[in-house]
Length: 170
Image (cartoon, rainbow, N blue to C red; front, side, top):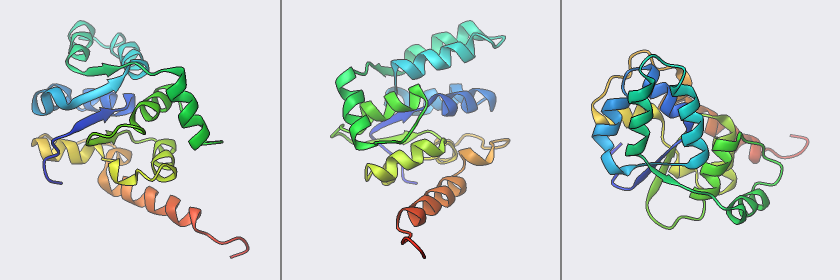
């Protein structure tokens, strides 16, 4: 992937995987002011960080992210557009914030519900795997679980798109 110049929205799972694979500091350094999230995800990440030995350093690292609040109006707008799709609260707020943005942005979150949201919203092209971000930043992908890879993202999104267009009785 060519170096992306816009905002990079991160889900808690992507943040946690970057920490677990010892690339979080490098990701922050490489993408600087591009990394963003929402308050709910910041709280989820903080809960995870507090369980780790270097929690103080990790908690401080969250201040390097641009963190957005999400209004009830944004949540309601998303709920209408994604009727019936269930996501965890952090993912939901991330998409509630993202789906109406007009500036260039991509979203890194490996959950299948997030992939379905992107498809339903017509924003599939805004999805990026953690693997792609790490490669672009020149960071190691060693030890990265499958669901953080570009191959997984493409495979699952393709499967979901095929399901969307499957004809009844076919």
